[in-house]
Image (tube, rainbow, N blue to C red):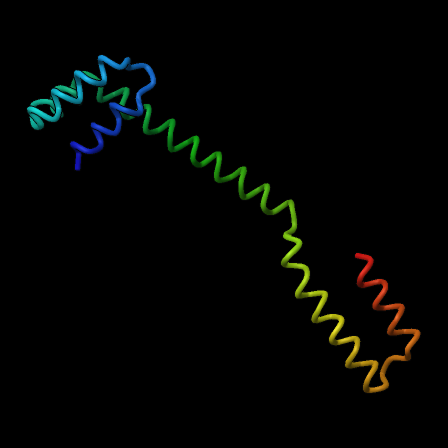
Length: 113
């Protein structure tokens, strides 16, 4: 498991050049126990910092997505509410609880929103 985390960190590191990535990958793949051990000694602290920064970015992206989703109402979610409200108004009109004028007024008000 740690081997995969180290390999993933090697490729995620923007400060490490192509030859550095190739060297670390070969070293870790050929001698996995020694390679992971040396990598953690040499770059373990920065590995933790990169992981923490990535987690913070993901948390920030998630929070901004939630804020954006909460601010903009979904138009498709409002449609069933309007339909059910129109059905309720039609039922009231059919039962004689609403006059035709009251029904038309409520209907136009509902559809204007």
